[in-house]
Amino acid sequence: MRRRSLSIFTVFAIIVTATCSLALSGLPLGAGAGAAIWPNFLLCVVFFWMVHRPSGMPTLAILFLGLMDDLIGGGVLGAGILALLLGSLFVRPAAESLARSAFGMRWSAFCGFAAVVFFIEWALNSVPRWNTIQTGMPFAQFLVTVLAYFPVSMMFRKILRIGRT
Amino acid sequence: MAQYRSSSGFGQIVSRAILAFSIVFGVLIYVLGASNDPRLDPLRRLSLDISAPVTGFVSAPFLFLRDAISNFKEFIDVYQQNRSLREDIVQLNQWREVARRFERENARLRALHNVSLAPKYDYVTAQVVGSSGGSFTHTIMINVGRSGSIDSGAVALDGGGLVGRIVSVGDNAARVLLLTDLASRVPVIIEGAGIKRSEEDDRGEIVRAILVGDNSRTPLLKFATKTEGIRAGQLVTTSNDGGVYPKGLPIGEVETDGEGFRVRLAANFDRLEFVRILLDRTDRTIDTDAVLIVPETVLPVEENADGRRE
Image (cartoon, rainbow over all chains, first blue to last red; front, side, top):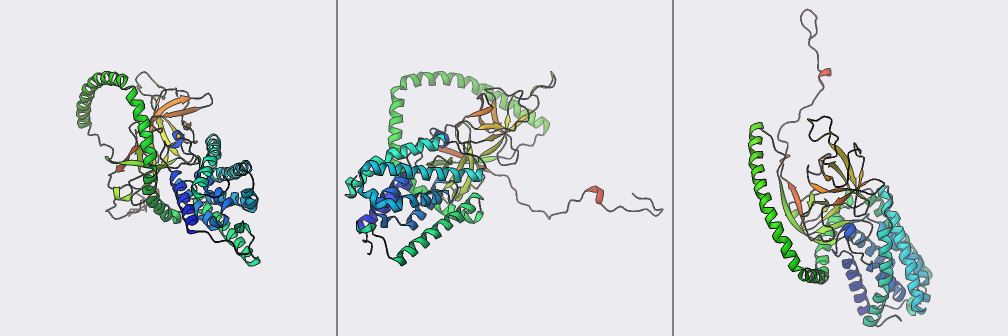
């Protein structure tokens, strides 16, 4: 009943995609409210690997990626960690059935995962400022992230030959 | 599907323990981060120094593409731009003569009145290498840190006006909290909003307020000392209350939205490529012995020989 070990190529792919997703989240495409709405690629990467290679995205890896995302983003430290960890709690038990299901189902699950993560992050960033963050920009980013999952997932399948989509 | 098989009892206990540890660790970091605990500063500095060059490297092709599109757009209307620039040059030449006259007059008047000038500021120019990306915080990363003599609290400007202030500094990178961020508070003066008390009073009472970021493009003006004289289009500048921002830095213009007053920022946040960081060169070293300042009322009272107190 041992878990299948990951190939070196898969480990390399996970590290590269996670690093790129972190670096892409900090692109200087405008600043503040004038910034272009840019997808949160880290969510796409974490969800994809959790579903298709769960042993490649263990809890400690999510903790590390959440911490790095918080540090690079400059937001409230810990908000990203908790949002990703709590979001992963919903995905991990269903990973096997999601990997077998049709892409539409997986995309819907990703919508739910992203919604949970964005909501928790929104709440945790609002609390220390004693003010609620406007929901317009987070909602727009949520939408582009959901849209971005399709090409990200397709690209991973083509390049890495894993998953059905 | 071997990778989905559930692990043994011991394995499950371990994975649950790791999950519990991770959540507790996350909560601990969150509590420390939310209270801006200085123990996390080394971690922030380290991440800045590591992520700034990586982000700069990864973003290079994207920025090249963005610049190419932007340059192509500018190339298309180059004729129109050229005409408008020529007109601007004629006007600016006139203004240059006026400015020179004012400068001479100013110097004469300062000499007459022995005016002591505000502390001199120097500046260093930095490139914007990253932004917060997320929609919850509004910060940018710049490629100058302690090696460029900048420190936490320094003020960042672009060609138009104030951009924000430095909140975290690494050796070769720093993070700027933008005016639009929810955590940003700037004491400001609204120029020309003071109601004149008499005919001789040419400026009227100074109207102060706090510029409060709310993650929108136009931050709010709150806690104005007087709202009667505030009108759309009035200039908003820093007031130096609290000593963080030097006095008189341009921020933007007042805008009304029906519910209150907002500020249309002068800085170009849509295309923020370079910022200037003001360096305060005021010498703040204390080279004299400290003395206890005691109110006069509690000073010992000496008595004369005839018993009278002085």
